[in-house]
Amino acid sequence: MNRFFLLLFTLTTMTATAQEFKAFKVNLSGGYALPIGRGASGGLLLSVEPKYGLSDRIDLGLRYELGLIIKAYTLNNEQGETTLKGASSYLITGNYLLSDTDFRPFIGAGAGVFSILSVNLSDNGGSVNGGISGGTKFGAMVRAGFKARHFVLGAEYNLVPKTRGIVVGQSGANLNYESSNAYFSLKLGLDIGGGRYE
Image (cartoon, rainbow, N blue to C red; front, top):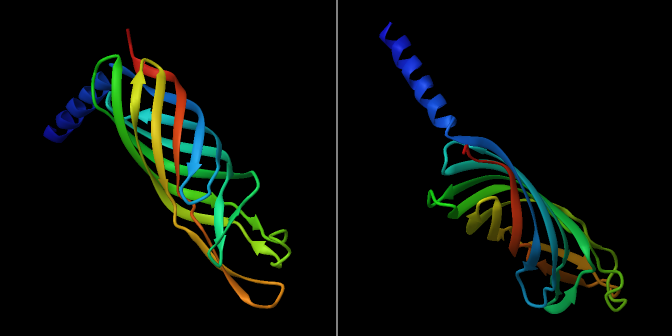
């Protein structure tokens, strides 16, 4: 019987806490991505991130991000650049809001799967056959920013392992390919839903 009352008390407390704020929200963001590495050009990002508030300060979410990015690579230490290509990622995220005011700085992190761009090297001065196929890599993300009511400004660093490979040159010699997949982004967004009840 005591366990029943303890469970009832816990559920009542959680329900009362949950009623102080709207738990579910969706963040829509757009911004600029700058790939890490010499000669990288960057591109545009769009992301959608449904989030659920475990409390007024802690959110768990799922971020889907689509980017159009020009990346840099090296081929036997010679610099090259990709054309504009699409890349995406799916991450489980967590945010911690640092204040209870209308201006709310936050920090966060996430982990998940990043799609890697395929690179066609056949036009690299006519010296290479084929290219490097795309794929997926497990990576992580750290972020910081602030929320002013429903508007969100944030900076993210996406840590994704490098792509390395060997391609065959026209002469038949093996050429070493390397490309950084990590990127930094600056995004402006809007949280739809969520927040405290008036």
